[in-house]
Length: 281
Image (tube, rainbow, N blue to C red; front, side):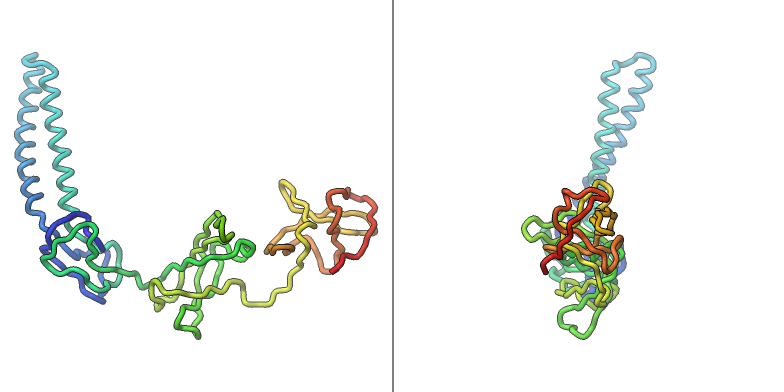
């Protein structure tokens, strides 16, 4: 919590360790000079409005030039803008809780002179918390918005908390080739700023069909692989899943036992006769 303007604290209500509601007044900074400036500007504005009204009547009967009236009107508008600006500064002398949360340790005493760099206290939301973690790019297929992950907070090794993915960074880090993922934790007992380990996946040893990456024929609309059926090439559309350095998971389009062409795929044509050799393991 930091003030937006500089000045001396005239009121401080920062209950350490207590919960405050959004909008609650936590501190006030001396605004006497601003209040006086506002009152002076208000008097000037009242006089300027009367002058503008008088000039408007004279202008209607050609008693003054248009430029004289425009100058009077401009003075009114300028003073109104000055009042709005001063009121904004007055509003900034009141520090309110930006959200409902728990106050930390107070860093300032009543009567202190504060600036926008002064830290009055901290405030934390202790309900649902966000957790950011990095994920290697090859495992990006494991998480989607809405996916569930498990979180183990440091110091609580026996407790697994559930979190839901709410956002993913669309671009991978160029140096680490990893993605930043943000999830929302259900556990309100975890402390903000704590380190945690994130477990992705459903926790089961899922059996998957993995084929070499070079067996995939990328297309504008679909990924394809070539199967050997009755000694001929059969092109089938497939859907891919998790990728590793040398292989890719096929989630749809292949069955266990299918024979997949892994070399020479760029030269094969539909229904072409194939010369098959077993691939080396």
